[in-house]
Image 1 (cartoon, helix red, strand yellow):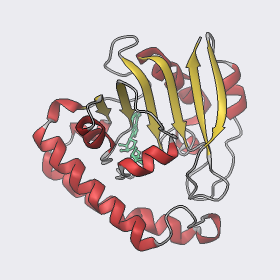
Image 2: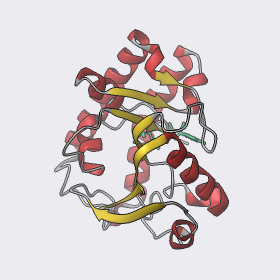
Image 3: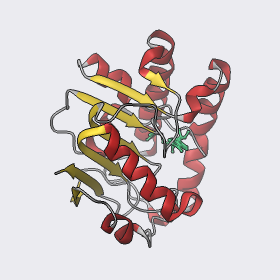
Image 4: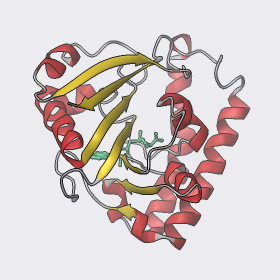
Length: 216
Ligand SMILES: C[S@@+](CC[C@H](N)C(=O)[O-])C[C@H]1O[C@@H](n2cnc3c(N)ncnc32)[C@H](O)[C@@H]1O
């Protein structure tokens, strides 16, 4: 799997973050600069990803190698993408490069913000974060992880959050097709409310919705 580097502005749009919560977990954060930039805005923010178990040279290598690989996937499915949010490929590449640089700088300077861990078992206490975000892992890799894993992963994100979980996108990587087991997984969640909410971001055509799970 790629260790991609989405930027703060992409997260802001994907998760419709009109206000920043006081404390946030970025789960499957990869090489994103969200954590660095949210911390600079005063948020208590932690990033978790299995890739943080790698040595620094290995992490630099996989983050750098993931930049062009992401573009290959877009090229292979060009008719499934829209450029209305990014405008141009150059703009998207620039955001990703800046985000990768910012991430690599921040993990060097503030390593405590970056915790190695994997869903469906995260190394945090119950309710540790007000909001848990998950970008481009759940649902997008549904063919790799399957239904039961997704249910366990959502329950774990609910466990470590006290107010909300937000997940984007809700479609498969590349093709942008719907995830057949999404409705039944949501039906199995207890003690929470959920909604599928439109967001101001779209790259895979039609993928302009996030899942918002709210603690009751
Ligand atoms: C496509 S990247 C997304 C990175 C970042 N969130 C972004 O939007 O650019 C997917 C990330 O999920 C991480 N990952 C893979 N398996 C995971 C698991 N079981 N739990 C948490 N993260 C995982 C990978 O290491 C990778 O960094």
